[in-house]
Length: 322
Length: 147
Image 1 (spheres, rainbow over the protein chains, first blue to last red):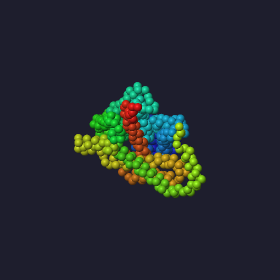
Image 2 (image 1 turned 90 degrees about the vertical axis):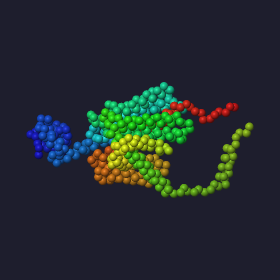
Image 3 (image 1 turned 45 degrees about the horizontal axis):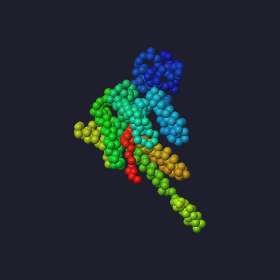
Image 4 (image 1 turned 135 degrees about the vertical axis):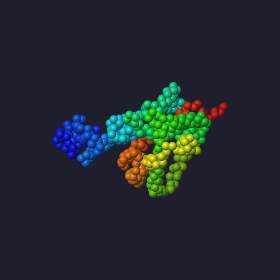
């Protein structure tokens, strides 16, 4: 057993600090830590065996990390749909506060629970929430500054909306081809950015194209609107082609191509899984409704009931005689 | 026709890849199948969980029956069991994760990120369509007859 001359007791409930070497010296806060004055061989040995040099597993460290991830990531994640549900039903203010708090805690997860790999999703949320809000608000301003019957905004908001949407798209493009790429560590791209960006570009192009054809098929005299949607689809498609051929500072074209095909597989899987789930839901409802008993038949109306109905109908038929 | 319009962008990319490079560069069928399978299982499970919540509201109009709830709980449970069973069958469905639990959690987080991208795309496409429609001049549906 490796010890140092400062060892007094070995507390079997210790917690390994993975940045230190083999920890067998009792410290003030209950954790065992090795000062930097000790030989580096202990540091090497401990990192080589992952702290198992005495065959003691550090279960408490795993539990602490799991508990941290539960409290500081997954509970905030569940707060968001719960808050949205509250805001739609009983208490809107409380629901919005709950959802907002959940989103803030998710964005803070890279700092509150850095050991969890899931916090990279929180990091991505914090990185893309700015451009996404700009795009959504910009589209809202453009839409409602036009010919709408309810909630019409001033005409000047249209230019502001166009500017906001353009800045949002430029911001997202800059996250691929400029220095704005979300990085969880220096020169390490957030892996969920490689999921988000190709999925967004590809689906925007597909949906805009579908919308353009729908306007032509279902709408009347909607050629101009259809052309606009074809332009939106072409713009997204152009960004896709640029991503497949132009390297960014941190994401090259080859990696983007791989992630694009993974995004296609991902979206296909989501579509099929969701459809299967909806089919099962429909089957459950159909089976239950089919097994319900027939409604009870009632007796036909009596003569007095028929007379009453006739008099009521006669009273309400016809207009005023001039 | 609408489905074909929806599929045109990825088909165009495939056509360009084959034309200029002669092959599907960057397409690893094994990795793609793994992602597809994980996405299917996770989407089925999470969607079933969401629809289970919907059944509570359905139940209010039918004197709160238990049978549909049990059916949906079974469907959700089947999704969870299938996910755990298939991921645990070896490295086939394990991506860069070392355990079933890690892969399951990764699948859920990946689903959230993909759903966020899908939601944003829907907002952009629908918003742009609505913007295009409202930006046109107001049209009258009826021609007034001269009295």
